[in-house]
Amino acid sequence: MTRSRAILAATSIAAAAALLVAGCDDDPPATPTPEPTAASASPSASPSPSATAVVVAPERPKEMDDDGPAGAEAAAVYFLELDSYIMKTGDTTEWEAMSQKSCEYCTNRLEQSKLIEERGDTFEGGEARIRILHTYEQDATTGIWPIDVEIKESRSTITDTKGTVVFEQDAQTSTARVETTQSDGRWVIVGVPDIPES
Image (cartoon, rainbow, N blue to C red; front, side, top):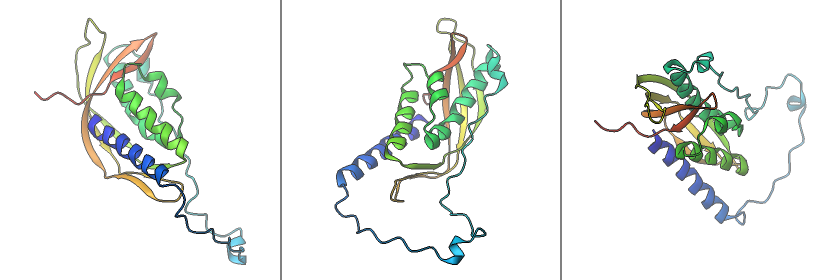
């Protein structure tokens, strides 16, 4: 899972850099905006297909109030469900609150979200359905609860301000191990590595 996410981050960042280097010298001359016709000005006209859809944040599960394995599982699912939301909206408040500073995966996804927002790109798709595969015993030394999950992710695209698709990824199913723990009474994510091969 982290490998595909890393590819997404690296690919879209590289695409962004390439587009920035290319500059705007080859842009076609601006065309005049056509005058609205009676049909297009009519209140009964169909809404524009490019109208921005409202993106709703995933609901924080009440199970996250539990400080045991049920809370750890709920935190893992909720965190992964936040991914497409932060890419679409740039609202990373909850993501950052749940990310431990040492979590490289968390930082990479945060940087991807901020890059999309800075460039004015549009992220579509990428919704994830999470299934718990296995919850391990809490590590007595670190306090970490490792949780193996399956992630079914819908197709996703990143489109730039000119309407050019700079990144696309087909729907995919992957697995990951979400490492959760508590800090100051809140669930946080320590890391999201691949599940080690047995």
